[in-house]
Image (cartoon, rainbow, N blue to C red; front, side, top):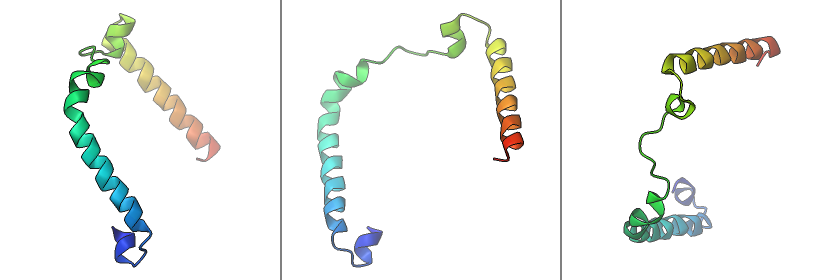
Length: 78
């Protein structure tokens, strides 16, 4: 909308596409809610549950990985 306000009239096609796409999605959502959107509904899944280990082990491993990653960033000057 900002580009249209600046006088770039070609952006009207993009704006029209966004509005039409949002309208089509809003019309298709009820059907998708009953079909497509339920395909991946596995309930509450956590990494410790999938791995079958205590959640504290996952936390310690992730903290160590992030510390190593940030150390590597500092070493590379990123």
